[in-house]
Amino acid sequence: MTRELRFSALAAPGVQALQPYVPGKPMAELEREYGVSQTLKLASNENPLGPSATVLAAIKAAAAQVRLYPDGAGHALKLRLAARHGVGPEQITLGNGSNDVLVLMAEAFLSAELEAIYDQHAFVVYALAVQAVGAIARIAPSLPARHASQPLGHDPEAIKAAYGPRTRLVYVANPNNPTGTWLDDAALRGLLDALPVDALLVLDEAYAEYVTEPGYPDSEKLLAEYPNLVITRSFSKAFGLAGLRIGYSVSHATVAELLNRVRQPFNTNSIAQAAAVAALDDADFLVQSRATNQAGLAQLQQGLAEQGFAVPDSLGNFVLLDLARPAGPVYEALLRAGIIVRPVANYGLPNYLRISVGLPEQNARLLAELPRCLAEAT
Ligand SMILES: Cc1ncc(COP(=O)(O)O)c(C=O)c1O
Image 1: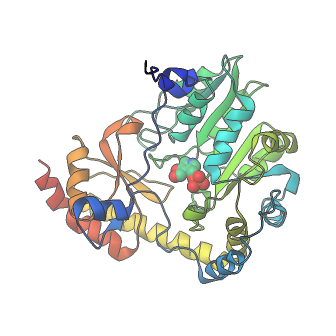
Image 2: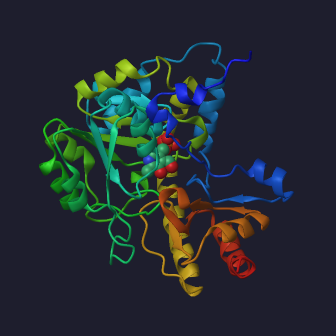
């Protein structure tokens, strides 16, 4: 008699209900599936400049040492990050991308019966992390799509209304992906002032290096005032190191010590650590990244406005485009034209596409192809 395979039923309850993360389509996959060449990927909020020459040299040098395990404590990188943020190295936690730290927070602080709060259209990894550990998700409704300044943005009042005695984590994406919306200093302070004593607020600042907006919170200053704050940052965006998977958090030292208990001993690799150190040394590259992004955002916003779309401001390296009709066919038409953008139906936004900022000629190509793809998809 063959034994019945019931692996799905054997999985932990949270895992049984999980939908896996859907990444942006890789270019090689598009080429394989659609037989197109000269593909353009504007789907994963990557940096179109790629890492700087200095960083590439550091990667090459570090590659010579891959026989050895990495420094599991990431000493050199932590010292550099501590100096950058004006904190002690014991307050830094390194992660395999900031995604890793977002998940470590759930593993360290949540369990069944305990609650985490996040916004309805927040970065989807929060939902996955919370569900995987079997904790309770309290989902705060977003601001309306027609909100004057922050359409679909986090609603501080809704988040506060979800606070309760079982709240352990509150995830706030600032700016949020995919909406590009943000909370200003006053709104964030409001959330921190009202935070239950036993809860931590995880402030996800993956795109912070791009931001020049006045009123954007100074999270280092906030951390000095609110020890329950945990700031997460990424090297994947403005630093251009998405493929190496390196990110970190800045928190109270005790929080970092708890995260250190649950992380894998070698959760960040030696090449990523060396590249991150070199990237921190390269201040000019960051200036260039920011300038390229601001020019690209303006180009996309203006080009899309000329095509009749109202594209709200974004503090990230992407825009969220409301097509006012199902986005799937338009996404497919763009794929046939060799352009990968990101459908966001899994964020509860089936009529929207998220478009990452590219180089000027890449943005121009997207803008040139879009009208034809819209027509083709009707
Ligand atoms: C808001 C937000 N947070 C975190 C991440 C994770 O970035 P990484 O794990 O590459 O550092 C992303 C990636 O797109 C993001 O958009």
